[in-house]
Length: 311
Image (cartoon, rainbow, N blue to C red; front, side, top):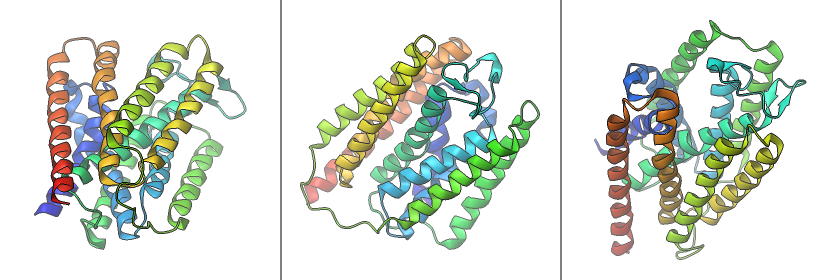
C-alpha cells in the first residue's frame, strides 16, 4: 500500500504543481485534471520509475524532464511554435524566423517543465516516501506509460484544432526528445554519496528559492522590453540552477531543500499568474491549494528530519 500511495502522490503532485499552483490553470478548470493527470502524472511516474529501476540518479531525471518538456511543448500543445496562443504573442520577443521560436519563451517554458512538472514533484514524493527503490514493476510502468501517451494524444488533438506546427518542427522536437532519453540512460549508474558531503540543506534551499524566483521574475518583467538581455539572464540562472542541483550531491535532505525552494517560488508567483490569467474570483481556492501543498512540504521536511535523527 505504501508504494501505491507513493505512485499516486507523485502522479497527482505533478499536474497540481505544474498547472494549478502555477496559476496556468484555475481551479475552476479542474475538469481538465483527468487529462493533466494522465500526461503530467503518467510522465512523472514513468521518469521516476525508469530512472530508479536503472540505478541512475538526478542527472537522468533532469534529462528526461527536458525530453518531457520537448514532447509537451513541441508536439502536444506546440506552444514552442504557436505565434499567437490565446492572443498572448509569446514568441514575439527574441523571435528567430528560421526556427520559428522565441528564445526567451523557449528557455522559460522548457525550464519550468524540467523544474516544476518533473523534478519538484519527484523530489517531494521521494521526501514523503523516503528511499530510492522502485515503487512499481514493469507492468505498472507500462500502465503509467499508456496513460502518458493517451494524455499526450488528447492534448495534441485538442490543440491541433487551433494550430499545427510544421513537420520539420515536430520532427526536431521528437528527435531532440529521443536524444535526451538516450543520453539519460547512457550516464553511469549513481554511486553512494559520503555522509555530510556538499553544502548545508538550508543554504541549498535559500539559493534555490532565490534562483527560481529570479528566473520567474526576470521573464515576467523583462521579456517584453529587453528580450535578448532577458534570455541571457535566464540562461545564466539556469546554469546556476544546474550547479545547485549538482551541489545537492544526491543527499536526500539537500534534494528536499532544493525542491522546497522551487516550490515556494510557485507558492508566491502562482497568485500573480492566477490574477493575470483568470481574475481574482478563484483566489480563495488557489490559497487553499497552496496551503495543502505547503502542509505536504512541511510533512516531507519532518520526514527528512526524522531520518537524520535516526542516523
